[in-house]
Length: 194
Length: 194
DNA sequence: GCACGAGGGTAGACAGCGTCTACGGTCGCT
DNA sequence: AGCGACCGTAGACGCTGTCTACCCTCGTGC
Figure (cartoon, rainbow over the protein chains, first blue to last red):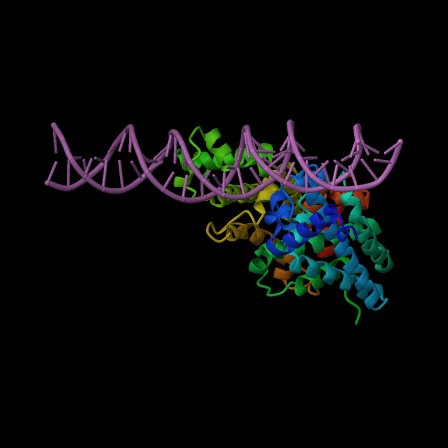
């Protein structure tokens, strides 16, 4: 998906992905990526004029990975939309927890050039999957589907972020994020079916 | 509140706060703060052994500021808990939008030492205000108050963050965050009273 | 009245960073 | 054979955070 090209460009992105997964977002320096790719520190410049460009490409891989996981989940799980939404949410939170560095990078808009690489648009298919499912379970009195989906996404995202920060467990006394997730889903979509 | 001490320590924090508000989180370097405080680059070290310590102190001011704003809102607004919750949420989102750099810094747990400065605990009073209000409007079938409050906070936080990133407006087609906010409040707390 | 020690700020060094620029080598094409 | 385009190297620059040695200025004990 772009990262496994044989050229240096692909190797750089792959090294960046590997680095952010292993060491976190702050470790992803241009020079370290170049080192891991076995080239001089000036080499990346041919493909990525600035550090931001390279980070954006790495983040793009992150979105692609997350999207692929969600699509895989959709393939595995029951077609009932409510079930699918629950599974999607779980996948989102699991991704954030398992790849925290990547997840952080993906939403560090101060580090990324969302315009040049159409990064925001890269996250759109993901939102579309969510929005389609939301539209199917939406009740007549609910907000419009796009709004409902946006609010739900924001809730998922907030849980992922605050949970990682440690504030949420401290404040709520919870030991896992599943309780919070269930509460969020029921709040937005109504009580879970029996 | 700690930042207006006359000593160098207070001046450093004040300079940091000013800098993050004006230029954003990435501009808050140790040396730049020292420069603005009119001291040499080594001076901060007496009070803040590392950059992280200084940033944490700045973020602490941010939490203090936000808490003060919320408390002011609580003083100004009608005692009806639902109204208060709406106002609190609005204050939260306004703060995030108006002081984006500070808001980012406050939740950059990778940059902060939440342990040493009890930073997480600093955000706790804020959560308590929210939790108390939530407890008052909670319906019998809702999740426990702490969980409900946590989920709602996460929703607010997610809206603030995703909105700032630009993804949410793009995905939902909304032009302001108020629609999203109302949807979130109604989802967690039930339909708004007439 | 004076030495002394501690607190607090200065100044220089170091390695690492992103960026810029000049250079070289290695192709394929005419 | 010669020539360009492509692609990577290497060194410099100014910036960063951190470390260390130094010094100046007090307050205190004698």
